[in-house]
Amino acid sequence: MKLAKRNWNNFSLFSPMFDNFNRELLNWDNKNYSSTSTTVPAVNIKENGDTFEVEVAAPGMAKDDFKVALEGNLLTISSAKEEKNEEQTDNYTRREFSYQSFQRSFELQKDVVDQDNIQARYENGMLRLTIPKKEEAKQKEPRLIEIS
Image 1: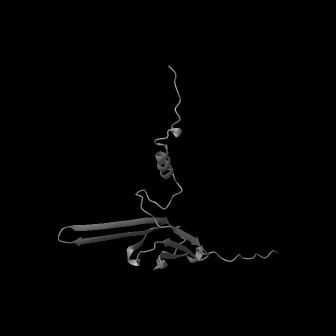
Image 2: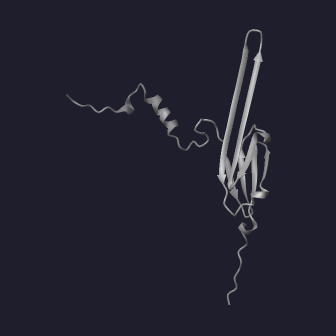
Image 3: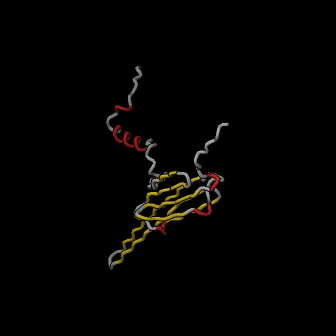
């Protein structure tokens, strides 16, 4: 009896199907999808001397679709949108619905953020948060020290 080594990569019947499946399954760089295969909005965070700027790309939504909450140092941006359509005629009833939601959370630095003055606005498909820093945490101009 001779043992033969089988190369499963050359198995022509299933190879293309499993290659695509594995490519999508193991694509760790695809960060726009959650574990439920729903899209998660992209977020940009910028820091400047006085504030942190957070931008959430969420076109097609209204400002009332968002919930922004601050619990301790955890900033959570979430949305839940549900649509239902029903059409009734003599012969049939057609119902369609869709539900989309997301939640993104960010831990803010302790003793750096002025939590009482965080501002949020939604315009042109972009949710923008301005998170001011406390006065003692702001970047200051370098102080020149005189040498004696």
